[in-house]
Length: 159
Image (cartoon, rainbow, N blue to C red; front, side, top):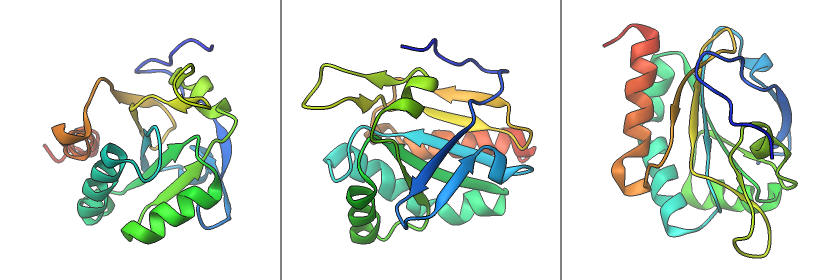
């Protein structure tokens, strides 16, 4: 397992498939924008649904600050598509079925269930691709998205 990345380090670059089927390169495709990269364990589960719904509720506030929200899990593209469509998510869900991206960010967990999944960790990446904040050990009910928004406000100078 890769060492966990740290605040102040460059965010590991990767390419992933969005739930819509398009590919995206993170953080490269978002130069100049703040990226909220939130790893979640499983689509359609109660905690991940609650978490995603809150990110969706705050979507416009993230956008006003120049931030893009990207959810990522080890679920398939199809599972993420169904999740995004069912919940009406306006942000992108990325698929990491082999866990390579989660491993690069140090959040891959194994031994739970039938396949590896990601820990619930969020990385706030600035417009230069540097990790500015890491939110760990957060439960969905603790307003995970709200904490991410506060970090984005700090980076954007809006606090």
